[in-house]
Length: 267
Image (cartoon, rainbow, N blue to C red):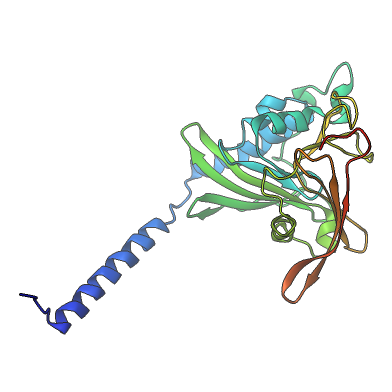
């Protein structure tokens, strides 16, 4: 015999279930306030970051990012996530090629700088801050997560003075990378000298000792705010040359040119 449940009971059960679901969502979004110790450790990260960056300590630099998933991002560098790539990025700077890279004692940290002190805010995932790093107002757009080894960068994105003047933000670059198909596996990492043609490693493209330049899609911002992109397709040898435009509906690809592999290139 089939039992028919009272409609009022069904409504009550639905309300309870909905309430429990809301409670679980609210619990998941609980923000833990930052302590004075947290703020001290977060401030110290900026000091360690600058010292590792300026003294060419690639592994020390990479260790400041959460594993897995923590990344450094910028227009020209892409989203650099893996420990090896983060370390290679740092030691690829010209200053690191000299016989004696700068020493720790000669490098200032974030503390004591002329820029405004960062304001650290608690978030559901940990913390965030905007850290001014340039006279023109350029900044680091930071997210932090607390790990068993202490605070680490969930992400550190750079917005330069020129990009700020063009009213570009971290979110703009994230959206362009998603639009262009930069899914951290489809495009090759690029290598080469600053202001030179950057290509993947391999005999078809140049010597393998060229320094790391960018992860996946490499973006260039023109003085007028126009943005172009370069992306080499993995295991193909060809590449895309893009330009992008911001519309009322969001970012769109304005032009995309596919350049096939050069003679003798990989396919």
